[in-house]
Image 1 (tube, one colour):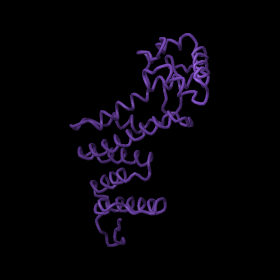
Image 2 (spheres, helix red, strand yellow):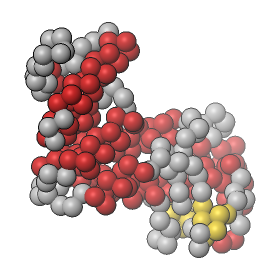
Image 3 (cartoon, helix red, strand yellow):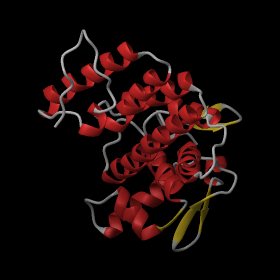
Length: 234
């Protein structure tokens, strides 16, 4: 089951078409793993009575064709996702957590591919439970990309470190730690002008968007050059 980029349910690479309520049902249970029927009905249909919400839940279950129902284990009080189902959002979270928890210096290239290429969780879905989970995954992904960039830089893989840092910048353009990683990679390769240019671009963006200056920590990273004005910071 794919929840990153868009909802997609696949059997042997073949897409399975589902109505929206069936998608919501599978997505919620897939993200939680195990959930009570009361929580499930109340979350997916929060603006109706409990009886009505439970009726909508039963209807959504009936919308699942036979083979899709096997994706859920249902009992009287709860539902859980079947063991045979893989959920890409879980794979992303596990990859990100393994990176931020790492104490050694593993090969981060496979993790970089996962973290860089995945999309946001269920874009276009604006329900509260989606927004909260989307932000959790976004923050995990950003912290993991920062960690990957730092690890790759220590290993001397400056081009890949730059790739990780720029992926983080694309996700959150105002995140200073990602911009510091970009500048650090440029400096490690001796590309001082590239480092100064990137710092200046971030400085302008921060001023325009928030009326702020980069931190002193960031400003101190930039060496003075004869052709550039002094670096300032808040």
